[in-house]
Length: 78
Image (cartoon, rainbow, N blue to C red; front, side, top):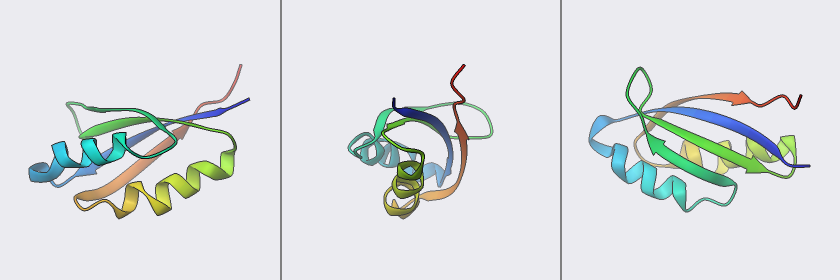
């Protein structure tokens, strides 16, 4: 069973579109969209294991130039 999470991202506004493009190329990120509100991007992670979320965040998302902060919401299966 895969693990899903939503990652809300705040970016440097001049770099948002480039951040979205780079995020869409990251393995484990199923979808990424620009959004309106206090966050600039929402990404949907779909990974094999809970520990993979940390890897995607640490090794990929947070290293993208223009990413200022993230908030991760892990989906709880019902």
